[in-house]
Amino acid sequence: MIQATRTNLLLLKDRRRAVSNCTGILKGRRQALIKKFLEIGRPLLASREETRRRYGRAIVELQTSLGLEGKDYIASLALISQRHLGVKLVNMNILGLRYRDLQEVESASRSLVDRDYDYPAVTPHLDEAIQLFELIVEEMLAMARYEGMFRRLGEELLRITRRIRVLEERVLPGLQRDIREISHYLAEREREAYYRLKLFKRLTAQRR
Image (cartoon, rainbow, N blue to C red):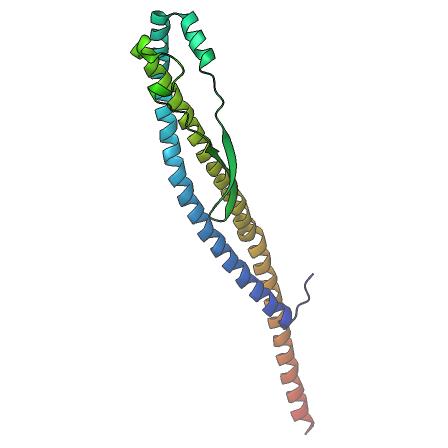
């Protein structure tokens, strides 16, 4: 229980002002995060849709190539074309939020001459399928980067929203209630003191 004094009343009002300012700052930061969240979210959704369409085209080209080149030939090409794509994690910062960014060491897409097979000897369907799948790998790595930022922003938005809700729904109402109760108590005490003073003056006048 807070003692009903003028000093505590002033302290409570200062705290209420500080909480209100803090809430305003948090709301401003939340708006900036929402703006960035939408900036990242729109291209991410568009990239997913484009990757989905590209994957469908790649499957069609691969099925056509399997019918023309044969499953054994495609399997042998897959074996000799295996490679490990290097990636590295880099610490990044966005609007004061730290997250881990994924960066490619080398590109997944290769030109025809860089592929480990005799490209003039295969059908264009196989070349197209390989190119599409390599592009899909690059897009998935790019989406992984966006999703890292997207997830970090989402977590921070939830955290700030919870803090704003606690301040607005618990802290501020509690401060308002304490300020109201102390103000009411002090006002009652002032009225009592004023009444006693008037009574004292009246009694003093009667004795004269």
